[in-house]
Image (tube, rainbow, N blue to C red; front, side, top):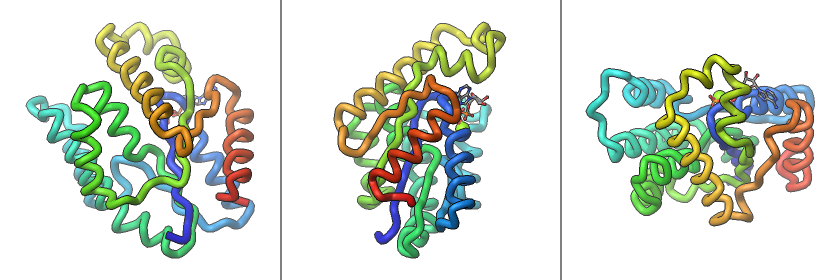
Length: 208
Ligand SMILES: Nc1ncnc2c1ncn2[C@@H]1O[C@H](COP(=O)(O)OP(=O)(O)OP(=O)(O)O)[C@@H](O)[C@H]1O
Ligand SMILES: [Mg+2]
């Protein structure tokens, strides 16, 4: 792989998409070649898989099926778009990648690390990110920011417990992969976080 694979991770509302957009603007204005995409989705087939995963009528879906569908969607995105872009030497940024499967399916749903690791080994065939930025803000404050007080009122206790497990899952992943996963304090202002993202990626030599 000649290019660099950069992934953005964190809890719901931590600011991933906001920062993806700012990084995209930065790369455009500095004339750097990149591919920006998101998971699950990013290809016609992956978007169809996404709709199966998110379909509210699929109540009987078991956790293993969910994890395998995410892996299938990821595999298609990787082979159809990400690997060719890396071969062309481009910077590839994905809004969520396999760490989301570890945080959500392995840790929060309780499927376990080994199951998710095995499924993803099939799916990604060793396409590890060069760096993963973890936007570090706890779910309570992220939710407050995302929807304001109204939406936090509607959160059920089980919902918040689940999201806390996701957050703790991410923290466990950071301890497991300290070289690859770098945290940025996501409670700061949008601009301060963007500056940290740019400095970090420049310091690694991944962007100019
Ligand atoms: N640093 C910040 N300070 C204050 N508000 C922010 C900050 N970053 C993002 N927001 C706001 O928080 C909300 C969620 O941000 P965003 O959609 O970027 O998060 P996300 O991580 O992509 O969420 P999701 O996981 O749901 O896709 C948006 O309304 C956004 O404007
Ligand atoms: Mg988002």
